Image 1 (cartoon, rainbow, N blue to C red):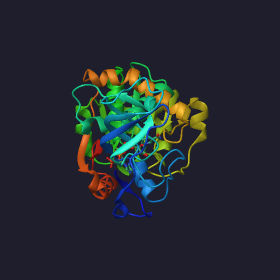
Image 2: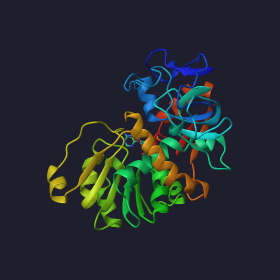
Image 3: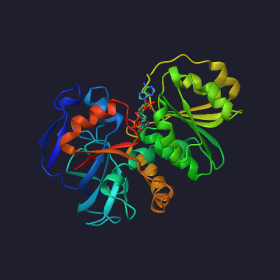
Length: 325
Ligand SMILES: NC(=O)c1ccc[n+]([C@@H]2O[C@H](COP(=O)([O-])OP(=O)(O)OC[C@H]3O[C@@H](n4cnc5c(N)ncnc54)[C@H](OP(=O)(O)O)[C@@H]3O)[C@@H](O)[C@H]2O)c1
């Protein structure tokens, strides 16, 4: 099979095509003929040498999500069969023509979705649903602040909040992404000029928001604390603006704020499978009904992975960047 490899760490141009033997499914695993995968920030970091793959993933083939059809099953597989159209998350190795993974790490793709649309779903929706609903316990009618609302995870989060009947406020650094987010159901868009947005959030939600989905990190967390309501919850999911910042601890203490750090990739298999089951039970039916939609920004071919990485790093996209295999 053909794969995209990281032969050495560096810029987008280091990515190279290579041949690898077809993997053979072990007990409980299926082999998926990958039709499309998608680019994630973690792939860019891995390529730069800043985010090593976990032990259960190939060290030099990026790719955290996939859509494809099952073409071989290992012993003990009972949920899936050859020919099933599936999508899901893996710890790495999805920039490839095939992959073996546990059958419970996959869900069946609802009818009517193309491979490219299906590949744009798992990482964005599992991350947003797990952080908002499973961890931050978001309930219907609550208000949510979503930073980088035009990101893959952000565009999924807006739609999940709308589906739950909540109120969403989203930030972007430029105004152009906000009308597109409003088409997905965003209630209030804020341009986070110079990284400030707390006062603008308090203008539209005077008591402060119940929940923050923090996808940017860095100094955004200090702003979050200024506009989250008493007993609010902040799910810290991304660190694009940096891993260090200065916080007013009094705001956490007096506001009795809960800050939840979360990462999907590094979790043990059982926890990843639990997140996948919650996605399958609570999100996939809404996708099937059309209440939640994938947001595909651009599609590149697997051979164009370097160009796709450079495009994502440019921050101009809205939604997901897909690689057609
Ligand atoms: N914890 C987990 O398990 C997990 C899983 C998936 C993703 N994530 C994280 O979630 C975040 C979103 O991921 P994604 O794949 O959805 O992102 P994405 O689609 O690549 O979009 C990222 C957007 O963030 C904004 N941005 C980039 N750098 C920024 C900075 N320094 N300061 C402020 N805004 C910045 C840009 O939008 P604007 O220019 O419009 O502001 C950019 O378009 C990333 O941090 C990613 O690492 C975490």
